[in-house]
Length: 88
Image (cartoon, rainbow, N blue to C red; front, side, top):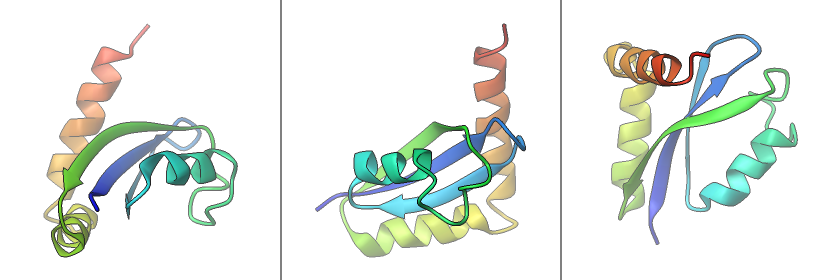
């Protein structure tokens, strides 16, 4: 079963959220409905990045990296690229 590490961008507070799941569609729906405590006050959310892994351990290691100080540079680049592409 593949696992997906994803990054959400909050249009409300302009911050990022990193998560991991085996069912990305279901998880994103739960985020949008405000069912996830960490993001329920940060709606609306946009999924700006996804990475697919074949095993759970690799996916959770990647999630841990992205949540670390070392991963912040990578996340900032993803956010900046997203914002450049979606400027009106």
